[in-house]
Length: 160
Image 1 (tube, rainbow, N blue to C red):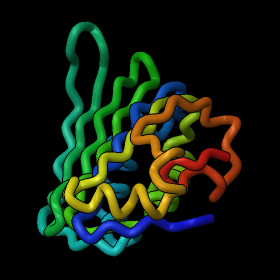
Image 2: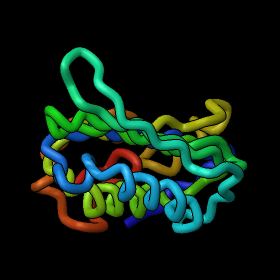
Image 3: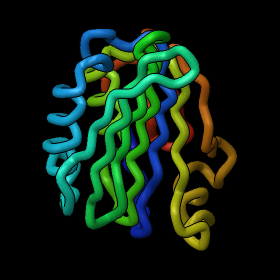
């Protein structure tokens, strides 16, 4: 599997459906994730995680956020609908495949949408050239995550 490098970093956005209710409803689990996960992807945590349970539009939710020197990581859950949104936004490159696979496993994600935004668009041409001249380049992909094989998903546009 090819690895894409980008010195300006990435913004990984996961809009997850059918998550493990026990995990996304556990504010302690979300706090531990935000407290420990930055180190897993070689980021520097610069704040204590903030996690808050609340109700909005009839749905029970949890929001969590941690600042990292490179930007932030946030988790927003809708417990009532077993949905979760996860953002890892960094001005430093990180292992996107690891972050996706870890998220799927940790939160028990069954379905969802994954989007990777490449920071520093001036580097886009270099990255496109790395990926078959840009012909197979995709920044957005709809997935049934239950069909994924670990470590086989993302090489920035080349699917499993």
